[in-house]
Length: 66
Image (cartoon, rainbow, N blue to C red; front, side, top):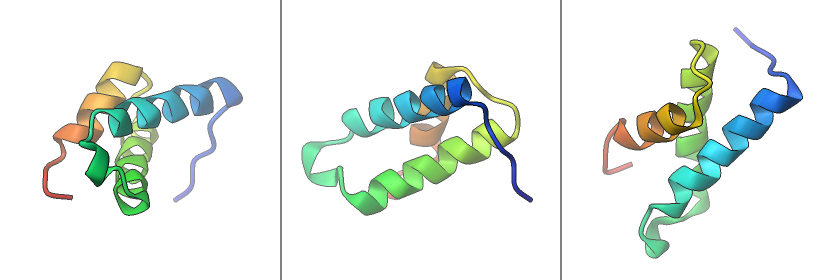
């Protein structure tokens, strides 16, 4: 199942990803970690979440280690 997002929502998702990645320790800001965070953010957005703080928190709260 695919869902498309309008440009404004994509901007919110991108910002949430950047914010989530920025709180990771510098040595954990790998491409793999960012992809996982992005996947989590997209899953939340696909379920209707658009609040950037809840997107960031949800992506990070999904569990460590990645």
